[in-house]
Length: 244
Image: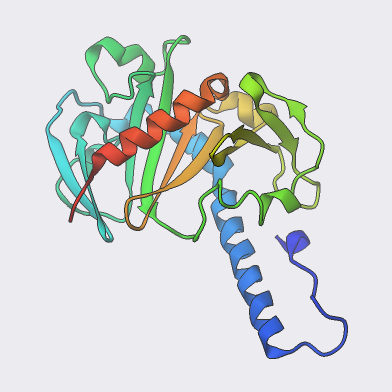
């Protein structure tokens, strides 16, 4: 993200504290770039591997340890058969239908096989945190500098901002929903052909547990339910957490 690198804070002598600050800012933007690069790839990956996930109707819970956090998740919510086991893991991928927020079961087969246009599928990934702030926390210090100030109206009171051409987010928009007394809802969504071809073109991440980041991807049509979607996903994710 060369274009979004902050400019030097002084014009003459750069003192060590300023240099350290510049390095910290650059590190944040570099980490953000790594996180950001995966949206289009992850959206395509979600669809391409959906049929090969190997569904199960089993509801026995597996305890998965990721760093300092323990998740107890029903087998039918764990997306890949190889991950349906107890033990340590580097990440955990789940899929849940909306609005039930449940794993695979026979009555919802069409939704999980993407053969029901009236259904919606969410893809959740638990992984160790890479950044000190989640997507809502990155709005003021980072995203505000990367988006156009003008917005177009989105569904349910959302503001949809285009990214500046130099920001490095081609074919994406930033969606913001203000909430009284709570951090804003912030999500990135693919646009154009990439957005139309993806099962889940929108992405948001939250901090949960002790050291986990939860990334969840969802269809753009669910933006109309963003308030209940975000609170429901967060509550469901926290319900999977167990004390080590």
